[in-house]
Amino acid sequence: MKPLSAITEENAHDQNTWVQATVQEHQAALTRYAARLLGDPDRARDVVQDTFVRLLAQPRQQLDGHVVEWLFTVCRHRALDILRKEGRMKRFEEGEAERVATADPRPGRTLEAAETNAEILRLIGPLPPNQQEVIRLKFQNGFSYKEISRITALSVTNVGFLIHTAVTRLRREFAAQQP
Image (cartoon, rainbow, N blue to C red):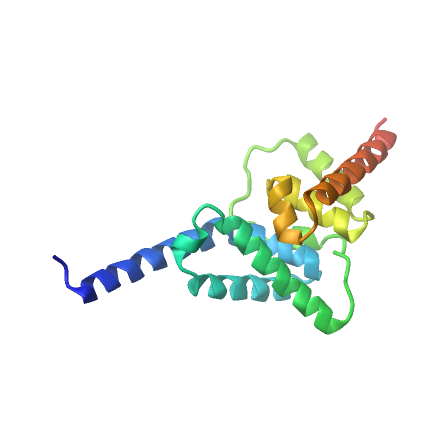
């Protein structure tokens, strides 16, 4: 039988390894998300850092199966706290998304796909902030309606309505701009 101190050290090592892997896997997506909410990549990095500090205090067992959802929820709440303190909500300025570095750029993208993505991102800009947020959570981060509902504290029905309304508008505007 192992002594209690060895078990405690082993658990701490497992927790640290898990947190490090979680940071590596989700830091870039969380930073992009926070930057869009805050309109400032530097403050976004601070919010993400705070999110991971809070993760350190959470027992892994409580988050197994929904750690990504938990991270985005905590990150969102922290970003909204900052915005409330400022007393205003800033829209994500054009060009700021490109300044937020991703950890792993996707090689092999065709020029056409890059142009299409840039155009769609430009079209997302004029959408209301709540539609922008749910669209980005759905299509850039791959969350389900239920997960988005938990992250944003909106009902699943409201999330579905916002996504449907935004996608309909984006399709219409994108089609109108094609030759």
